[in-house]
Structures are given as C-alpha cells and as structure tokens.
View 1 (spheres, helix red, strand yellow):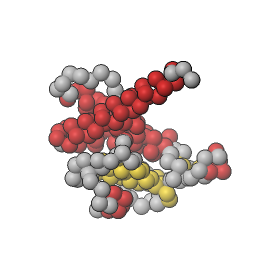
View 2 (tube, helix red, strand yellow):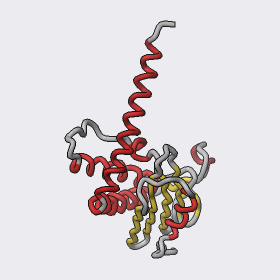
View 3 (spheres, one colour):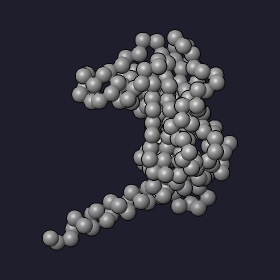
View 4 (spheres, rainbow, N blue to C red):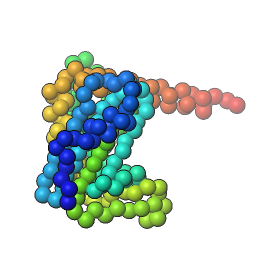
Length: 190
C-alpha cells in the first residue's frame, strides 16, 4: 500500500481545480493522517463564489460517486465548524447550526484515501453513477482525522475561521430566504 504523500500533492491538485478563482483565505487547509493500513489526505479551501467542487480517490482510483471516506469528511466538517461557531461566536446570535450544504458552499476539496483491499462499488451495484468507496472503516478514519485536525486549524486561524463562518451564514440566510419566497409563491392564489 502506498503511504500518503508527505509533499501533499493534494494541494497541487487543489490549486489546479481552483485556478484563478478568488479565495476566501490564502492557504488551503491540509489534513493528513496515517495509521496502520489506512491513510487520508485532504486539501480544502473556499472560494468567494458559490460553486462546490469535491474530487475524491481511493487507492488512486477516482471515486466519482463519493463514498464512505467522503461522508466521514463531510460529517466532521459540518460538526466541527458548528462546534467552533457556537464556542467562538461573540455576537451570541448562534440561533441554529449551519447545514453541511451551507458550510460547503464555495468549497473546493481534494480527498485521497488509501487502505488495504478497498471495496469499490460501481454504478452497476446500486444504479448510481460513479465509483464509490464502501468501507465503514474509511468513514470513521476520515471523520476522526478531519474532526481533530480541522478543530486545531480553526483554533489557530481565527481570522480565517470567522470568514468561513460568515460565508456559511450568508449561504444559510440566502437558502432560508429562497425557501421563504418559494413558499410565499405557492400560497398565492392562481
């Protein structure tokens, strides 16, 4: 099994994906952990725009359908940002948690997972497009590494953390307003 890359080639891949888009903050967040037969590397950054791009791999194979390693990352990202926001929001206006969709708005991420004997499901297995990593162990490992290292990053980068939370809140407010407008249109008589 190939071990994770100490030079963080995921950062190079991330830079190719973001191109010249304006970033919310300069340096990407890099998460990298290895334990026995498992290794995960993630590079993530937010652009000022609304588009979310996520590219994932398992043992070098693109997992275009995502998978457990992606689910673990997303869950930890959502929980960790919300935990940080509740603990550090000086305005005391943390009314409800941000959704994962709100937090991921504008996010670009590259996630590489390595494990022995990955179980890759293809589109034929469930009728969904793309390859998907099906390992529960991958989800737990990816989630734990993301939660631990992202929490440290947020604590050590308070200015960037505020920018991320402000962007996520703006996305949440826009989503709620859009739902409100759609609901009002539904209630109008024809």
